[in-house]
Length: 224
View (cartoon, rainbow, N blue to C red):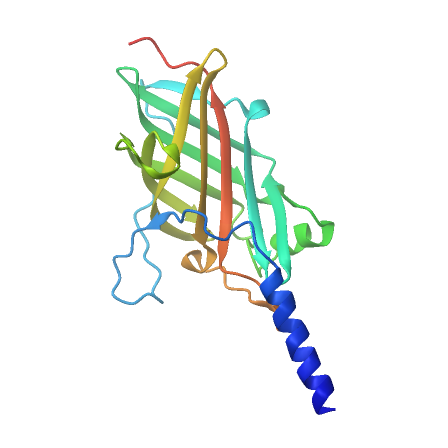
């Protein structure tokens, strides 16, 4: 019996060590923490995603864009995406000055049908109570030369998710070509920061970090 227990423990350790996650070693979004207690969720004022009246706007080309995610358990990763979203860039003198996005959380789709349903439940997004997530930038600045990952811009803004609003800072890579403005970003957020705390099964715990992948195409910027 003792040998069997040791063998089982060794097998579990081997399994855990062998399950590399796509999330490992990815850049984490900087989350502003103004509370002295990490367990306290910091809320900020609600920021409207409505376009600024009179501003030059460029709406995302949804058919050529995607918002994907990767979540991880001890035993492996799950991938998914949000099928319904909308967003735009606002310009000031041909420079991006504001970015806003709405995401329909009920449109989330995981690689396993059962997981898709579970993500919509109160254990995770609780879409009946919190049907959408929003992001509204507060600043868009050029990234310093040599920024990790070849980032061209740094975007800071408020992410409203699961009834919690927190300021995040993310790097993006932007390229302008004949198709328009292609913007990509890859970063992790800690779901606990937004009060999504479901642990999972005792023998297959869910990791806190979630990888977000943005691949967004906008029309060409306005002429200077």
